[in-house]
Amino acid sequence: MSALTLNFINGEWIKSSNRKTFTDTNPAVHSDVIGEFPASTPEDVDSAVAAARVAFRSWSRMPAPERGNILKRIGDILTERKDELAFEMTREMGKPHFETRGDVQEAIDTAYYAASETRRLFGHTVPSELPNKFNMSIRRPVGVIGVITAWNFPVAVPTWKMFPAIAAGNTVIFKPSEDAPHSGALLVKVFEDAGLPTGVVNLVQGGGEVGSALVSHPDIDAVTFTGSTDTGGKIAETCGAMHKRCSLEMGGKNPMIVLDDANLDLVIDGILWGAFGTTGQRCTATSRLIIQSGVHDKLLEMLKSAASGLRLGYGNEKDVDVGPVINQKGMDKVLGYIEIGKKEGAVLEMGGARATGGKLDNGFFIEPTIFSGVTRHMRIAREEIFGPVLSVIKVDSYDEAVSIANDVPYGLSSSIYTNDISTAFKAMHDIEAGITYINGPTIGAEAHMPFGGVKKTGNGHREGGWEVFDFYTETKTVYVDYSGKLQKAQIDNT
Image (cartoon, rainbow, N blue to C red; front, side, top):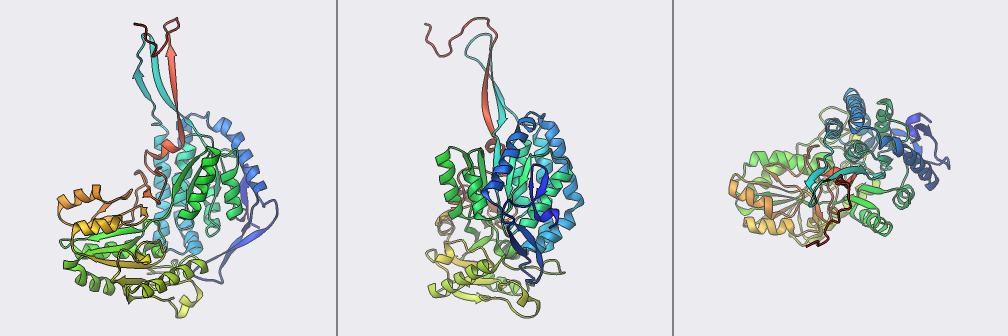
């Protein structure tokens, strides 16, 4: 086995304790086996946590700007290896090469941003109510962080979590998805080559058994998770019972509202990118298109014409717009929802089947699919499909559009297309979501901005930007009394 098909614990690439493995293959080319990766055990988690706990003692005491210098080196190496990483990510999880390059760029941006924030881990100084006394607050790291991520952004999302965590002085146990173990290992190799001290970041590959062991480990101080709402709920239960911090980034059913005054050419570009980028396998994917009646029919015809020109294929080949879904389970789920849409009475405008012919027979490809005549109560309008399926809903007014947009259990991203500035500003407040785009699709987060949602999308924390440091740090209040005598705060001495 090569180093990059092993776990990385305490600065060493090692096999799992049980020597068992699982196979990782290319979802676009089934014959392309990427490697055999450790099917790790709770004992491997124990070893990783022990290493992280020891490393925390020195890492947390290192001056924060010095930690930032290491993060900058990580960003520099990611820049040097951008094309190599993007190629392997496309090979492993399927989205086209131009998208995986963007994935790595987001990690680069996050590295440099987190590095700069090590000089801005601000506390507060405030006046005391007593004489000759000084009051302040400082930030302290939380401890050992368990990081569990999905496969669809196998470099960007882990770095959203790990970079601010280690910038703040924490140490990390990283479990990537079983569908993106190689990308996770390549990322950790960058950390190693940048000179990150031993034990600060540890990699444990595997599935649900590893995830459960990580979440329930008594020496893990906080857990950050990106994945399904069901799994996130179970993680929250465990963390709640153990009184440990938990940050959840889960599902979405994101609406794009198009009003009669919208620029339809701009809308088309946004829909194609929002609904079919990453083959619809984003938590921020545009999965509901809510169109005002005055432009509904025209926009629908424009959309079908534009979507029919999308090219499916292996994303490391030229001119590919849409890659495969991740695996057989994912394909079965998406095709199942397409059948549900038909049974519910939605009109199948295009797509609706597995894409076949030539090289497409060798992968998990699904035709870009559009349903019209969708109502707010249909399952395809309410449940996360995680595939290239778009539900089109016709409305008569802005108020009806917002009502439908908000009428789902999720609240991650949203967008509205309109040239009326008053309506745009109303939508910023009216739409129940953590993110709202004006005249843009529901995807396109920037590394220095908070990212997260409301309702069943998350549990109130944010990733990215300045707010993420609130999760990875504890606030400590400090009083300095230099009066030379006992002073009793909040005691009535009158």
